[in-house]
Image (cartoon, rainbow, N blue to C red; front, side):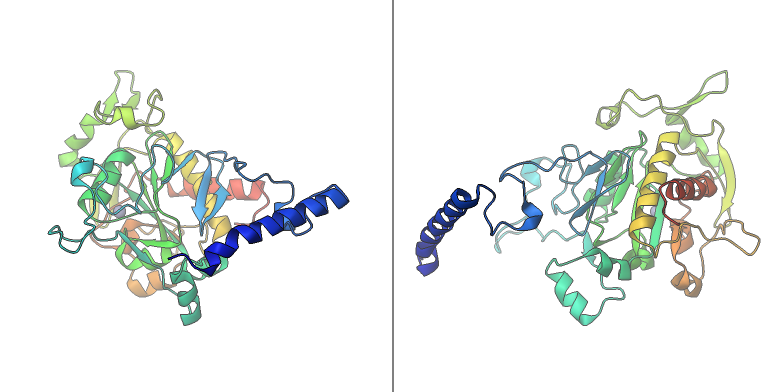
Amino acid sequence: MLGDDQRRGPRRVGRTLLAAAMILAAHGSAPADEPAAHAGLKPGSRLERRGDEIAVCGQLYHTTTPVVLWSDPGGYDAYRLEPRFKPLSDSIPPARKEDTQPALRSTFGLRRRNLSADDLERVRGGGWDLPTLRKAVDQFVIHYDVCGTSRRCFQVLHDQRNLSVHFMLDADGTIYQTLDLKEQAWHATIANARSIGIEIANMGAYPPASAQALDRWYRTTPGGDTFLTIPDAELPFLRDRDAVLRPARAARIGGNIQGQDLVQYDLTERQYQALIRLTATLCTLFPGIRCDYPKDASGKLIPVKIPNDQLDRYRGIVGHFHVQTNKTDPGPAFQWDKLVDGTKALLSGSGVTP
Ligand SMILES: [Zn+2]
């Protein structure tokens, strides 16, 4: 229905333009009612991105390492409800009540932890800001994906398991962000409400007797060099498909996690360098995430789940195995000191106290 507002609109615009023209004619500068924050901008001009930004409460923050957002070409969009990898004709969510398909479920939720009733009313309408999100977030959960590539990881999480994670870190060091950090992703049970999660592309850890799954993904030369061999079906989707990818240490790394002896290949050096830059970004934006990992009295990594009351008090970086007894990621090869020391060095170099 056409109402007063619609009829009034053009006349009001006309008057505004006329007023602006008169002001310009009088002063030869921008209209006096142009907000100062927009001075010098042209309507329709594009905001340049550098390709290293993550999205937090709708704002973009630099990480200084390549990031693909869910809205970028080649990105992975956890806001879509339909499966990402089925044919499009099978993937349209039901639009009408009479559709017989079951409704598609969201894969993420509203963060509520430490928020007042007023906060919740504001943010449920989309009004998140960083100070409010800082009240809720104080852990960064590290996973490996047992998929080997971020594309395959998103297929399993999103299409098959109805789960979500904020970041995926591919073998070539590319970071994918699938959701704004204001969303509560579903990746680590009791830690979901307070954490940001990352799935690192890595084939995971196995008991030594059943580690042959690793043979398909790693090749060691007679000279002792080990290379990552991404399967042909996955390789075209790696962003840097020409990269020569090696685990940061050539040999399989053994260790005991959650009471199990396991072997695993290390992450690639590119993954560590990207993870360090992302962690430095997160520890800067969220001071509640201390740049440290769970340690025992002697300063060594705690290699098992942390009791719930202790986990409740812990603020910092954790492995998935610190949260759940049935998990072993990020595994015995993950270099906690490399991550934490690298992050602290980067932060101190940029003048931020970890
Ligand atoms: Zn995990």
